[in-house]
Image (cartoon, rainbow, N blue to C red; front, side):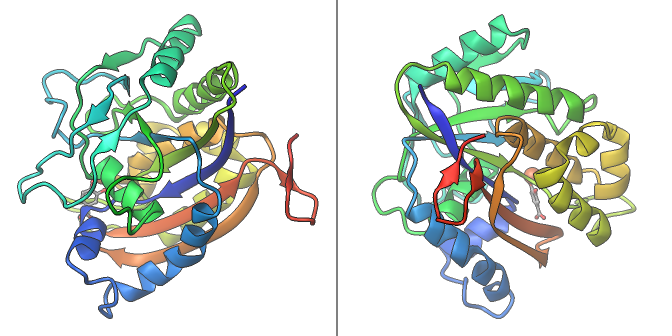
Length: 291
Ligand code: DHB
Ligand code: FE
């Protein structure tokens, strides 16, 4: 039986990747953000999964805005890194896990989620920046293969937060029904509060972000009942990316253990956060007790 061992929630701001690619992580602007990543990175390096499921949104790089699937899953052997207008990032290719992907697609469709299947997919900063947050120096290959799970948070009407949470619950069940004993990590990406354009460009709502960081761990249902309008009003037109954290959370156990958290403003135009969870409850001796 496969199992989800840990979960990483992280912002995916493109300039975080650019700061790493251009050796600017110790510049005064960036250092506090990257200092906040260090303990999580160390813990994750000690707990390498066999596969990472990355829940993210494409930003009109691979998915044309004329055809916008609500939920999609990649089933490819490899996902080329998209050129978003300033050249491809100098990072390793993103390898897939097609057998587990196909299993997830089938289980989710049987469970009532009409998933779009992506046999070819270029991955943009929504996926590659979280991989860099996880593993800053991958060398020739990332630590594990990746399964992209794409959510439409770009074009109205986005899926409801409740539906994202339910997708996560079904995804967790689908992972656990896979016969091989794979250790799986899951990433929820995007957020926190930010709005890139319009009259409220630059919006940061720290009280909402702090509330969200608490509730994603202890009371995700209270976040699932918020409407898409609530997310846009409170977190900004791009802050609605936070609904993808609910897909991650739904895949986890009811009780989880927070390993690390950091919140920093600003990263580009956004409030950036990282939150790392062990999927289980600790007994104090270091090893999680699965509930
Ligand atoms: C920025 C943030 C995003 O989430 C994104 O997808 C693109 C840009 C930004 O703040 O620059
Ligand atoms: Fe984004």
